[in-house]
Amino acid sequence: MDVLVTGGTGYIGQRLIAQLAARGHSVRALVRPSSAATLPKVATINGNALLADDVTAALRPGDTLVHLVGTPHPNPSKAAEFERVDLTSIRASVAAAIRLGIAHLVYVSVAQPAPTMRAYVAARAAGEAAIAGARLTATILRPWYVLGPGHRWPLVLTPLYALAKLLPATRDTARRMDLVSIGDMTTALVAAVESPPPPATQRIVDVAAIKSAKLVPIAGSKP
Image 1 (cartoon, rainbow, N blue to C red):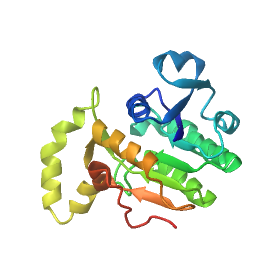
Image 2 (image 1 turned 90 degrees about the vertical axis):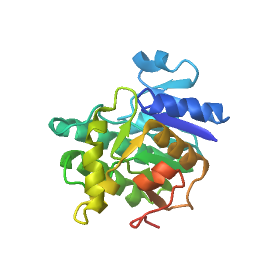
Image 3 (image 1 turned 120 degrees about the vertical axis):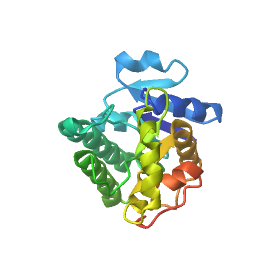
Image 4 (image 1 turned 30 degrees about the vertical axis):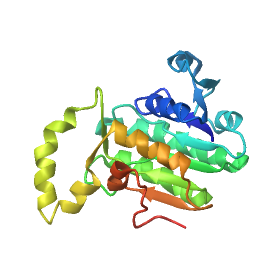
């Protein structure tokens, strides 16, 4: 498939691009000029993922667009960045997708509802709403925290997760906000690229489906 990745120089993006290329897909990445050197084995297009015109210029009709742009290491103090970067960039991608008539948009959102990180969840939920409003063919993955190199501190919470999954009052939240590995995440993203949903359908994928890579839609997926 022809795939354009935004946010391809990041934690998930570099690993995903490598896997897609290894599987024979034609992959391009929209990057700022200063970041192009971090992706030596993929075609790069200079541009700003916050600008719809730049995303449009990088896309081709029928592309799969994987949107991975986001604020690094999100925390509650970065509410303004979630609006400026996370939400602005997905709105730019949606606008570009409408203009070009892409085949499939793959968006990494966040587990929701959630009792914490309200500004982050709100920005990602607004991004999902933009996709639904445009009636794009889309897969929306909802991880909470993706474990991997440099991103392992939540492992100390493993006993608390285990306890929360045993208690009826917290079981659903603990499962919805469970930890996934970077391997789980990239595998699920590859599966999303290779198996798009029906046209004009937004497939919403939860943590359990990400971990299984079966991409089973959860309640709330929008036809």
